[in-house]
Image 1 (cartoon, helix red, strand yellow):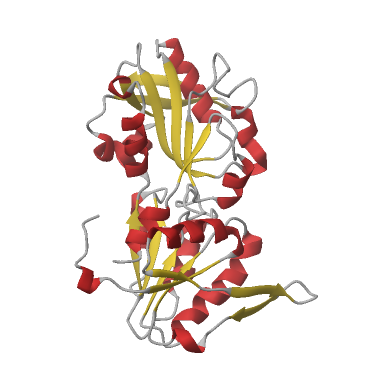
Image 2 (cartoon, rainbow, N blue to C red):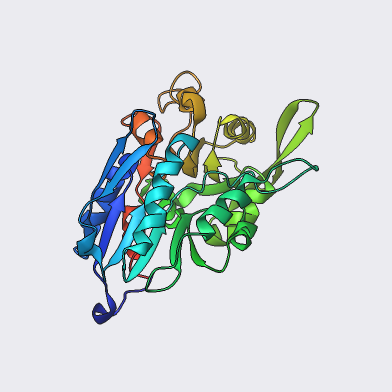
Length: 323
């Protein structure tokens, strides 16, 4: 991102949900132009939210942002209540930062009756009220499918960012940086990311369904004697990554690492990467597993657990808030 003229830089008041407090503090630490604000997140006895935006009168005429985490349906309603209210408090502009767009992988119908919840979520966000400064900016990192940008209406301005620069920076720091090969677990990941990683040699795997099983095979490229880094936008159970790793090792890879922007890991599925199947000391484990802090609950769970490393989006978010 290019440097902005200092005259054009803006002071931003950043609100955040409970889950994102640590990330919000990191974002604020990146820039003196960002000041953290607070919300009282309370509930009535029936479980519905009882919310209060502190200093609501003082944010009039200010540039305001909200850092959200839609980690489960249970927390979305209370955050939406705040997101819909902030632009109406006579703010100069409003930006929603939603690092992980959670329903992104449910973006299409395969048969009549399927519900594309990615479209539903985009419609909900598209109805955020316009502030005095105009439409709301919605910042999202590595949305699952590029066509999802067209799911948003004209009343918001989606800004699609990526965590890949963080990965590239980390790869250049490795002692074997000259032996890095990037692997894509399927054609979708290749289409999504290859232009951002085009100066690395690449390997493409492919997934073939045989009955109920999903078989991973090497489609093209040579991983032999290299440190191969599998790149994808998100991980759920991690099954595909593990199968891809096995194929790469079978074709002579010296070691295998992985990067995903969004470490979703439902039901603590990250654990399969830290025990016998994972961990840096394990012969067949991943050397590194990089994720960003787009999913705060995962970040807390995997803290100080090899092979995981967290690449923070904080600096990138701070830059995005200046756009």
